[in-house]
Image 1 (cartoon, rainbow, N blue to C red):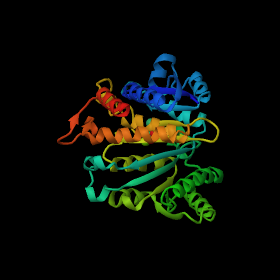
Image 2: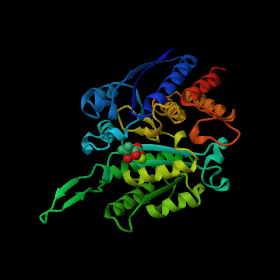
Image 3: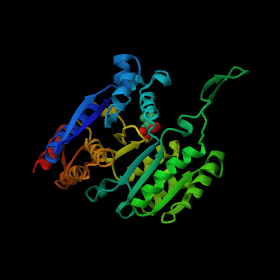
Image 4: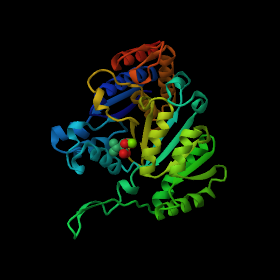
Length: 361
Ligand code: IPM
Ligand code: MG
């Protein structure tokens, strides 16, 4: 029986529309093979939404997302909107989407593909075999804490304020996702905080340690965030699953991504309780190469695969896409970000076509 899914597409800004076009073609093809019918609906977010409506997350977009089975997002942001006040910047659209859909759990895998070991800036023996999952809390912490703002002091200077806050229930719910994730992987979980300085981190460590008693099969360790950053570069293979707050997760997931050679290869999932999940590449909108057909569409394609796996319960279709990506790399085809000697350089569209050809056969 044909499965029907309503998918909201949020192409956003910069390279977003180019990479989204590739992912949609891939989904259509895989849909035919696996008897899945996708009903795609595009909506505005980020700079594109600002230009069209004056706001980065129009209410209609949030509604469309809520009424779909899953959301595929490309990227937001660009130089053009960088000088707007923060609540009108493209980033506010993304943060509003996360908050509006209650997407508190952000899963960011960083797995090195054997074909790309040489693209990493680190030594082969350091990165070969790296397979890390960063579980980042996404709707709390300093990103959303109050008070926030830039205020005038009595002496007339300005004072900028943000607040890092976590409640026990916020820590517990992301903690549970992390323990469950670690359980399905190698059973090792490293919680990252700054509890040598921050009270909010002391509470974090306390709760995560408590939770561990419910998951005796998971081996829990703790690291301070500065040390975690160092260890990620020094000996990344010691990590399996990492759980951390919003800001530390933002930073560490970029670092983990780069171990794999290119951030252009990595997908992510943002999940809540009842609302549809949002799937997006870890990389941004790359305004410097936007519109030039230079982008790597594979993180977007792998995000679509992640969507099939985590939200739509179509693991076979997800596997099929992931195998196709490996095959295209195996044929020595590369976009600029993962290019190395002896490989064939392709643009975004041509990479999409090559992938489609692999998936067709
Ligand atoms: C990310 C991005 C976003 C974040 C920005 C664009 C708001 O860096 O998804 O990691 O900081 O969360
Ligand atoms: Mg980031």
